[in-house]
Length: 226
Image 1: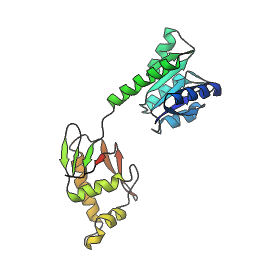
Image 2: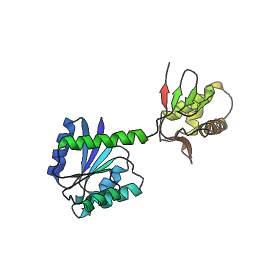
Image 3: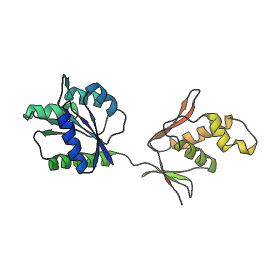
Image 4: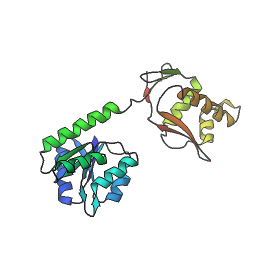
């Protein structure tokens, strides 16, 4: 379900928006403070946000501007009773994707949200596909073949996205039963896999976290099973 973050300091407005949006198939969360709203916008847990221009003593324009500068890319729609061209222009220049003037029709609000979601989806790269049948990793432009051990290693890292997997755990899972070698073999195969991931823009990366292990970050591949 699509989850929107509603940012407004008026509880009556946030409650009315939440009720109306739920009727149109959205899950909603609310926030009334600009500082906490910025933290929540940066979590990546929401598909979009609705931000009021006035947030008590704070400015919704400043919030959006700061969020964009911090790398927040989700669709943001601003709400305001201010309807002058200069006001709408200020909202868009701050980084909002759209600007809706109060009072508004819910049908119009939802239609505008869906337009922005469609645009965001069209711009978002599709995840790579990892085939369990032939051990290929591919996207729309390239394909690499993985060895059996490289495939197992990538699968293992995919099970803990954005979280470190200790070297000893990788070794115990993939090599210990063979009764030979040592943990250094993990580094060797991490190197092999990194080289293959770098051959194309798969939007994934293996990071080494000192004293913690290896972490797969980025857009997780989709596993295609037989």
